[in-house]
Amino acid sequence: MSFSVSDVCNVFFNLEEKYNLNYQEIQGCFPWQLIRMYLYYDITRRTNTFGAPQQQSLSLFDKIKSFVPFVKNSLFHNPFSGSQQKDILIFDHPRKVLFNGEYKDIYSYFLVDFLKDSRSFEVLESPYLNEHFTNKQNYIKYTDRIQLGSYIYKKFHKIEFSSDEKELISNIENDLENEFNIKINLSDILKMHILNFQYDYKKYTELFKKRKPKKIFVVVAYENQAIVAAAKDLKIEVIELQHGTISKYHLGYSYPLKTRSDDEIKYFPNKILTFGDYWINDEYSPISKKNIIPIGFPYFEEQSREYMDIKSNPNQILFISQGVIGRYMANLAYESAKKLENFKIIYKLHPGEYENWKQNYPDLVKASNLGNFDVIDNSQTPLYKLFAESNYQVGAFSTAIYEGLMFNCKTFILNVPGIEYLDDLIERGYVFKINDVSDLVDNLNEFEPSKYDKDFFFKNLDKELLKGVIDNG
Image 1 (cartoon, rainbow, N blue to C red):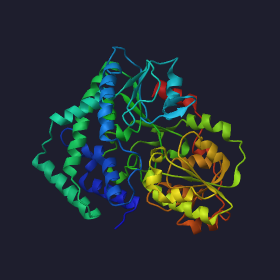
Image 2 (spheres, one colour):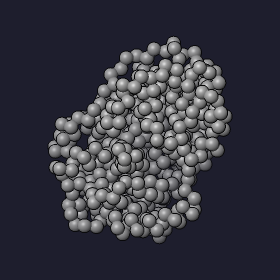
Image 3 (cartoon, rainbow, N blue to C red):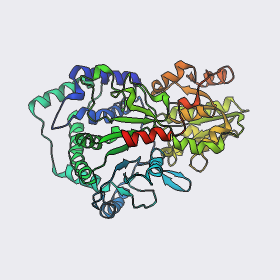
Image 4 (spheres, rainbow, N blue to C red):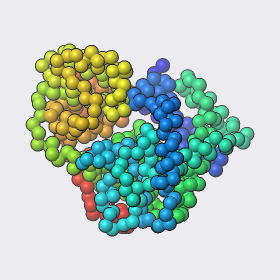
């Protein structure tokens, strides 16, 4: 039996209401909040709602080879070194993009530029695939020391649940197994996350007491709960920077009212700074509208500028891939290229798919032998240039879909698991849902999207609004 994203999310919401899970304290923390996203990804993968991500995994040799840099970074880029206090700490996104000749986090780099002359600050950087890509700067420290310590801590510590805790865990586990017809070792999942949290919470508490920041900015708060918890317990404001889609079916952000017996979700940030007004919705957010602040998306603003006036090819279709639905998209692109011989088909892979696409997507290999089909398996060709040159885009639920709308691409969304993320766009008539290649071919010219205000999705950086957040809270 297959499950949609909404099916899985609704099971989670119902269990959270039934057991008051977001407020169940176990071993001194709220572990359901810690495992919520991990468990969602695990279940959607094992029930084939989503495929496995196509990103190349690290070999044993790579892991062993990376151990030495981990130790080196722990010594020479130790976040605890130095006694200086900092007004602001920034926990950026691990994945960096080559931007103006150097690797940067596209979601937080503008903060560094904004703060340089007015505030003391430090950037805390986590490794991506066990590497760091940014240029060395005196304001950048690495979190390798904490990650290495957490790994060692888990080797020498164990969790023993009480009888009441075991009963609750067993009840949840049974309900999940009955709903999804798969075996789930909830106890082991909880132990792993609790041990991680215990160590990380202690270390970040020590770090924040030492640096005494007034505010902490973080990208992807739902993967950094120890940072959020330690800061909030010390009365330090935590502000998340938007990095992707936010919807009622994204469990990093969605806590419907019935899942909350209290207004606060302990490991949720105090505020979120969004790309634009479109992302403000307190229907499912545990924070109020006044704390969801549309400051803009400076990376899009800067990078898109030089391509906005490019004339698009009326017969070019850009396909946007994602690892978890890549096989569906590759097949659709191949079938489209065969039917639309007079169209140019561009298939843009996600960076995590670059290395293995020939092994994972046989349809793309066949399609690449057609005269009207190109596979983009590198980041040298700017994505925004591809949007500007294309009259149409086809995708699933990538944030890139919204970026394509900014270039007036007529947009088609393939009906695959995860389409629920874009329900609102479909209902507003901004995009068109398709089931197969016939739907696409039949509606290329027939579909006329509703009008929309581009600033609604991605506005230019509002410096005054950002200054207010930094100065006043």
